[in-house]
Every structure is written in structure tokens, then in C-alpha cells.
Length: 144
Image (tube, rainbow, N blue to C red):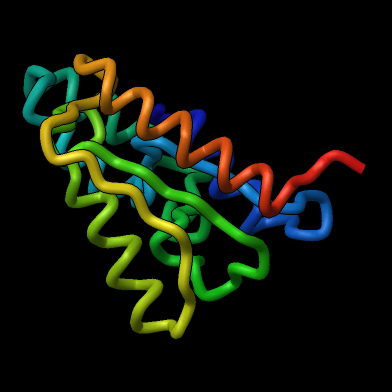
């Protein structure tokens, strides 16, 4: 979830030669949008301090490391899953990735969970994710 999901996506986008595939659950796809979303949980002073730390002197454009803005580079199979009720990494992050992929002519496997947040509350949703992940890995990362 969150950073782990992001790291899986970013790894396969940045260095596809190192990976057969990647899978992400509730991963961040656009850092700028997530930081803006998260700002409402900070005090004004805290938000300003965080923003300065991220975008201050020596900062770089976060879009250059955002899967939603680099998805056109996808060359490996990718499974991305997200819960519509996620309040940590909002579902809009998933929708943005899917939209950008569509504009770029890139496809990836998708799993959407209508009643799920940032984790699984229902055993049947978790079982569906694990089954989908197992099928994906069996197909794209078989044992040698």
C-alpha cells in the first residue's frame, strides 16, 4: 500500500530491464496531487513547512517520478488495484493513472474494490486480491 505500491510501479517504469512485472495495491501515482490532498490534515504552519521541504531549494519536479506522468514508458506487465473508499491514497490516484495510460495507449491489469479502503476489512475482498495477484504472478513471473 501507499509507498510500497508506488515503489513497485516506479521500479518497473524506471528500470524495466530489471523486472518481469509489478503489482501495486493503493499506490501513489501523483505525488503533487497527494501532497495537496494531504495538506488538509496539517496545520497551516505544518503544511507550509512540509511543502518547503519537498519543493524548496534543490527540489525537482515530482511529476518526473510520478507513475501517472510516466506511464507511457510501461514495457512490463503491471497489475494495479485500489479501493474506492481509500482515504489515505484517494481513488482519484488510480483514476488518474488509468486515464493517463489510456491517453498514452498503454494498458495494465486493473482491480477495483468498491467497498475497500486502504486495506481489507472484508475477507472476501482480501481473498479476491490475493487470488488475482497469484494469477498475475503465475502468468508473468513463473518460476524458472
